[in-house]
Structure formats: C-alpha cells, structure tokens
Amino acid sequence: MKILFAASEARPFAASGGLADVLGSLPAAISQTEKCDCRVVIPMYRSIKPEVRNRMTYLGDVTVDVAWRKQYCGVYAIEQGGVTYYLIDNPYYFMRDGMYGFYDDCERFVFFSRAVLEILPLIGFKPDIIHCNDWQTAMIPVFYEILYRYHREYEDIQIIYTIHNIQYQGVYGREVVTELMGLPSYHTNLLEFDGCVNLMKGAIETATRITTVSPTYAEEVLDPWYSYGMDRALVRRQDGITGILNGIDTVLYDPETDPMIAKNYTSAHTAGKKKCREDLLKEMGLPVDDAPVIGIVTRLVAHKGIQLIQRVFHEMLELGCKFVILGTGEKLYEDFFLEMQEQYPEQVKANIAFLPELSHKIYAGADFFLMPSQNEPCGLAQMVAMRYGTIPIVRETGGLKDSVFDAGGRNGNGFTFKTFDALDMLDAVKRGLAMYKTPKKWSALVKRAMKCDYSWAQSAKLYTEMYRELLSDE
Image (cartoon, rainbow, N blue to C red; front, side):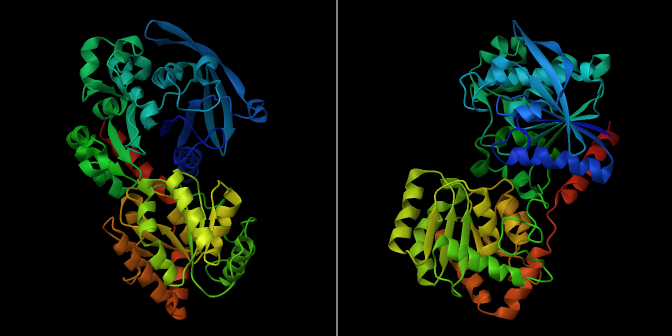
C-alpha cells in the first residue's frame, strides 16, 4: 500500500502541538510494522532549521492555481525515520514567523491543499490513500472530488480525513469559494454551513472515510455538547466514522533510558522512581516526605478542567497532597496557582512556563497525574504518566476514557470520574489516596500502569487494517 499523509506540521520539522507528534511518529510506525510505503507532505516554514534545509533534495517546481492567481510551488524531499517527507515551498505563504494566525490563513492552506494534489506527477508517487489531517488539509478531498478524480493519473485514490480537534474547523466568508478556491459557485453547497464556508464540512462531505483520534471521540463528535455545531454534518456520515487512539513516543518517554530523570527504572524494578520523587521534591523546594504528590502538566485553559481543580483545591490540600504544576495559559488560572503557591509554600509549586525537561521529572517523580478535562480528543499526557508509573486521575472523555480504566476494577490502571463536576473529581482523588496508603495494592497498580502498551505500533496496526478495508471496498 502507498499512503501519503498531508498535514500542516510534523516533527521534527515544525510543531505546535499533538498533530506534529502524530505525523512525526505514525507514518514511521506503519512503515516499520506493516511494510507500507508511507510518505508525508507539509509546508516549508521559516522555522525549519538551516542544517535541516541543507539535507533536503530539490525535486522541482509546479504552478498551483489559487483561483485567478498562479503561484510558485517548489518541492523538496528529505528522509526521516525511514519515511520520505516532502516540503512545499512558497516564500510568500510560508516564510513567516509562525505557522498560524495570519489574516490569509485560508488562502495559505487552500494553496497547500491544491499543491498536495498538483505535485503527485512531479514526485512520481501515486498513493492508494491520501490521509488528510485537520482543517488545514480539508480542501484536498474537495479539490479531488471536483477537479482531479477523473484524470487518469489520479484515478481511484481514496481519501481519509482525520479530525484531531473539532473546535478548529476553518470558517470563512462565502466569497472564498470563487476568490480563493476557483470553484464554480454551484459547488458552494459542499462547503456552506451556517451561512459561512466551513472547510471541515467540505471534507466531511467529500472524503471517503472520516476518522478521529480516539474511539470515544468518534462518538462525542456526534454530540452537540462536544461538536461545536458540526454534529449536524457528521450525523450523515456516522456509520463511516472510525476512532483510533493515538500512541506515544516510547523512545522519548522511557523511564529505563530517559536521561532527564534522576534514576532510571522499569516496571520490574521500580526502586528508581523513589529517587525521582525525592529529586523532584528537592528541585521544587518542597519537603521530602511520604505525602502524595500530584503532578499537573497542561495548558492552563478552561477545557482542561482547571476550574474543577480551582473549586476543590483547598480540600485536596487538606487531604495532605502536594502539587507540582507546569504549564501556561489563561492569566486567571496562572494567577490562581501562583497565589496557592504563596499561600501553601510547603505543598504547592507552580511553574508557569514550558519546560520539557521538568515535564519528564514530573512524570517520573509524581505519584498521581491529574487531568480532569472537559473534552480531550485523545490526550497523550495520561499515557506518558502511566509509562512512568504515575497514576492518572482523569475524567471519562475522549481518549482519556479509552486509555485509563478505574482501579476499582480488576484491571484498572488509574482513577476516573464521569461528570464534569469538582466533587466527583475530589471523590476520585480520595479513592486514589486510599489505595496509595495500601502499599501492596499501590505497588501492583503502578506496575500494571507501566505495562500498558500505548506505543504507535498498536495504532499503526489499526490504521493499516482500516486502509486495507478501505481499498478492498473499492
């Protein structure tokens, strides 16, 4: 099978979030475990380092139509992890400081989507499947359906569209159909939604298959409470929505080899975790004792459930917990944790920053990892925490529900609560603390969590099964 992944970012070239992790790991995992020919195409941003650019091979250029405009499109190639990455070069659109947030983002990614299709003859690669990701590539299935499907060199390509976060849909005025896309106005119905042009809606209408980044999220996007209005478009495709849980980088996050933590350890020999705990407390200036340590590594924003933590924070401190917080976000939450640190200096340390090395120390040194999200399409932090033997406390939503199972059951690996309610979260914390005080049960829980396999190999297998099923249905 030949698979071409299209996305707006991918590690190690350009990254702003979880999408880059997926595109930096999943294609390689599929190539290595399933022997597929996987390739990736992303924009050539200014942030790509000169030493990386110097390793690229220039393949040529094509002209891409952006409505009435004729735009240059250079194509570069580089191999990373056994996967060929193609980078689309256009200085006007992509040589900027930053990847998103510009007034012409619609035009930039309409160009990119059209370019992905235009470069196929140049690179000599006709994929069986083009796998598109998020709104920035949502026009690929639309352009394919209207302009490319019946050309000989483009026949029989299947297109998958993955929703990583349904909140970001690519919503613009109706004029972009003729002014940027160059499509006849009678195709506006494919893209029109609530009086606007919605790029995600266009992909939902035209892609062969719709996927999400966890099985539960595939159900939640059909619920108006989660879908930001898009449930009305998705309900017509609900029989064809597949949810596959993302994986984590098990090389980067490996307590046995991680150079950022105080002492390495494994699920069979967990003694090193005690040293990591001691090191974390010392570095944070907190007393080194047996009081349970709760770690929080997150963006400090409302949909991460910070308001629930805020609501019962004093009650959790009264239970004897210590908190180590790492993240940035909304000022009211940053100020809250800084105030709590000042009020409870022996129990709270707030790090309002983005510090990757400290995140590893928290994963390894904390006893619990609190993640009470209002919505979480997949979530990776809970999987990373378990790999380090840090027990997650999560709300049952999206990928959290699919990866964390309550320790009240025989095979549980964490503690969960259902409703978005601070008292329910507090109850889950109390249940966790009760088990923490029972060393034999706690040790068994830690080992069980560490043995959970959330590697990309598992995701790769499920994606490959879906690809084969899709091609067998042709």
